[in-house]
Length: 144
Image (cartoon, rainbow, N blue to C red; front, side, top):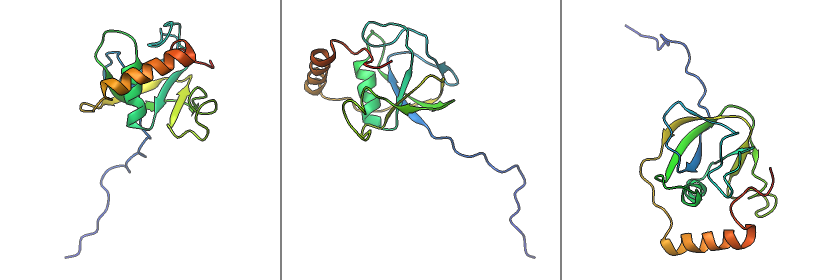
């Protein structure tokens, strides 16, 4: 007897590109990260964009540089709308977007969390914080 391999269910959906978002915010699966909330950086003003990256290293920096007392976290997120290169890290500092950093005005859906990751050494983190403070007088966005 010959059996054909026929799907018995609807075709699977296309895999959505996921990105990383580093922060100290305590978020739950299914929540949305949106603009208009106080930023984790600089003056903590209302965020006009939200940021994500496709590299774990950039997300680690995001978590480590975020202000606040919360635990550093890295979430897996799916954008719900268009994203664009982050001009603070690409056009102005690293042409070609080698950090794979992006921003959007559209929410990001939290679809997971990276449970185990290695942060930067204390020396490297201090050097980055010193450099950021020297060049930008804080971690506010250069271009909103």
